[in-house]
Length: 146
Image 1 (cartoon, rainbow, N blue to C red):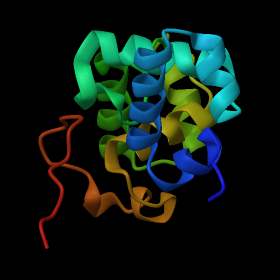
Image 2: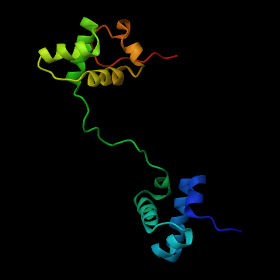
Image 3: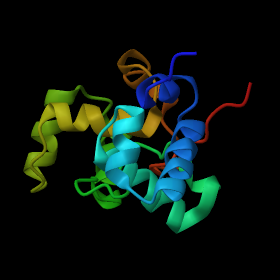
Image 4: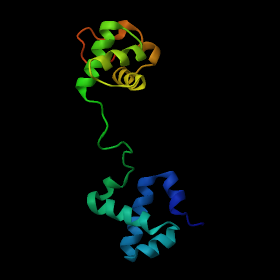
């Protein structure tokens, strides 16, 4: 029987592949030997061992790729201003940008579009529809449950 590499095992089941790395490492107590046996890098073995030590077998699965922090998130006050202006005037992105500029808030039209899209999570065509805006001017829109 042909020995499977770590990469081939990983494609089938990442958790099991990492568990095999850890098991082999525990028996040999050598990161280099384990990496050679599975034809992978020592860093892959180190990462699997570190995860195993920090949380056991449950921690060997894939982790989320989502960022832990949004460093450039638009403040809620700015989102509220954009939404209230949109509700009040129902103007386009460029006109909204110019209107907000007169109020002392410089936002590009694309930023305004991104804010509206992130609030509604719909297509730009639906964002342009005045009827989709909430009546109270809040930034959060309840999603319809189908």
